[in-house]
Length: 283
Ligand code: NDP
Image (cartoon, rainbow, N blue to C red; front, side, top):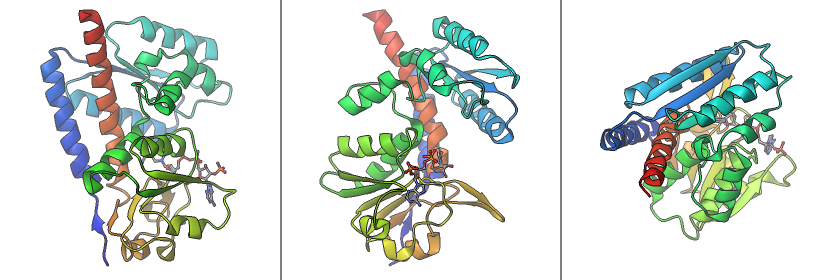
């Protein structure tokens, strides 16, 4: 078997076009504030990409670039100002933050109803309880790719490798919400290859280049590779692509798989925030 490619770029382009149409229907530009502290080059690239994607979807992008020595109090004061600013529908503080700033304190200060990254404990609780909130963008994008590829996920065996708050845990919650039977594996799991071989849906979110090998994958499985690893020669995922593509039915490439969906879902969440505010104002 040679797996069919899940084209994240094409899915993301379609989602971004949907969002742009939603912005036109809304009749005003939803605003996304992105805060970057320090000069980490990778974070700078992400922030620029988010701003550009916003503008292309007809949204307003507010970039706040602060020096690395910004105090936690000053950052919290900025977040509070953005919470109160009616032009801002979504707030994103780019991680990682410098060591002297506690990311949990910053995330907890963001208004949960503007927390388009879905990291605030209130949104984590809403997701776990099946309530409307904001879902972290990367796992949300993975779920969309899975539903577009497989349709109904009910009863399928899903294995998520990785249990971070940003990817693994919310991914597991989303799959559970979609009625899959979910196993979450991590660095202390025993016999990871055997766990992975059970999966109809295998999501790798580990950060180890090529860790998932071909003989870990059940024939016909759908494999979502969240990993982004910089190695000599470019970017690779957590999945040994060529080996795994020989077993799987569907697979996301790296780059061009999950990555493009993440920013598209950020736009989706920002539009959702603006739509919810409009409904609240009308009520
Ligand atoms: P974290 O480092 O926060 O989490 C990694 C997880 O992998 C942990 O739960 C860890 O287990 C687990 N793990 C590590 N080693 C092993 C192992 N040998 N066997 C089994 N599990 C293991 O990473 P993130 O979740 O933030 O990111 C994961 C990957 O996804 C990275 O490559 C990152 O760059 C990428 N990423 C991509 C995004 C995109 O837009 N496409 C967005 C976000 C991340 P334990 O908890 O026990 O330590």
